Image (tube, rainbow, N blue to C red; front, side):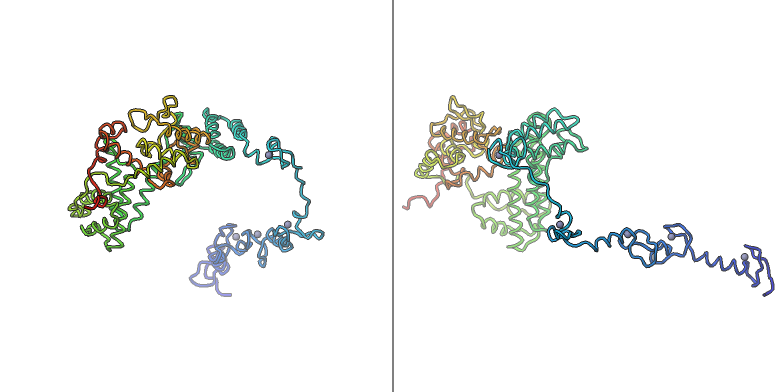
Length: 540
Ligand SMILES: [Zn+2]
Ligand SMILES: [Zn+2]
Ligand SMILES: [Zn+2]
Ligand SMILES: [Zn+2]
Ligand SMILES: [Zn+2]
């Protein structure tokens, strides 16, 4: 043993090495302690495994659930090991295909081997009298689905279930019952119940907002709710139509080539601002369809520039480009030129172009009517078709005869309501016309046919022309429906109406015609133009 140099500062034992404060035992203990750290799981001071950052005991984990495992060689914990052993003994059942313990006597799993509870014997349905399985109230499923009481039963259940049912709920249920078949109405009531049950407010505007489906249609429930709430002054109509219009504008803008797009978006914005200004000022604002048609024309021009002319910048557009574009579709020349003029006026004022390329293009066209009209023979054939052929759809006959004899536009026919029809005087109030239009016997018969057709829908919609899409609500038939309703007769509504207007304006005083039809005098004067298509004149 070496010579004792000094006492250990920890334990007071002998320190043999010169220049050391601790004895050999305390030195070894200090080295050991330096290698250890507290384990984050068991918080004991231990040497941590590098991969897991935990002590060696806490590092042993089950491969499946992550629980601690006692033995070093174990892969799974006890619970997981038991489950794995059980699963290894299971086999796929040949009947249901799921794993299970196959029974020797059946060869199937336990669930499949057990006998089924027998179904109740079929009963004679009280509605249709057939021997079928019973669904409810003594009826088979088919009859119960169609039974008109079903909706009221569902409504009563809903009313009884709610702690504080709103006052308007019975009215809305009646409105749904009027508009839809019992099956569809029940689906709507279920949806309504879910909305009333959730944690949000049951205030009509908030309910209506939550009932709306995303996408182009807001769904039958939201449509009925909107009609009902606006009719009873409980909520404002939704901004659904504005949303749809915004979507249509966006689609037109996005269809244009990328580099030309920002200017078109700016043009759309500009048209909307000027529309808002026109509304405030009380002047005539652009309608949605006008804005959309303008955007479509500019989009077509942009695509034309990109593909045919290879131009990706509005600033490089020249007169020749505009002319080539207008020539590509001669019939739309006038319409497209008007839009392009507006667009380039906008572009110039916003410094997108330096020179307006449409400026030197003259209109070249007189403001007269230039469309085609029907010959007398064609008019006779159409009149015969609509008055005698009962196979023709009543809507076609009505729109056609109103245009042919009374010069009604399809808008006037579309917005015609049952209140406008006076059965005693046999007159019809059309659009903005100051006086009711007396109906001749042929037209009156067609109006009656149309009303009978409407009665067969059993609808509360006030309009005379009711379609499958509008019978549940109160809105008029769509513009698209009216624009195709005359397809079967081969002539468009505008052509038929113009025939009548030209005839009247040229044989009578245009001012009288304008007054009778609720038109402005200028609109009637268009049909008085003395333009004659040179190809139609007899050769000299
Ligand atoms: Zn010591
Ligand atoms: Zn540990
Ligand atoms: Zn486990
Ligand atoms: Zn099975
Ligand atoms: Zn039945």
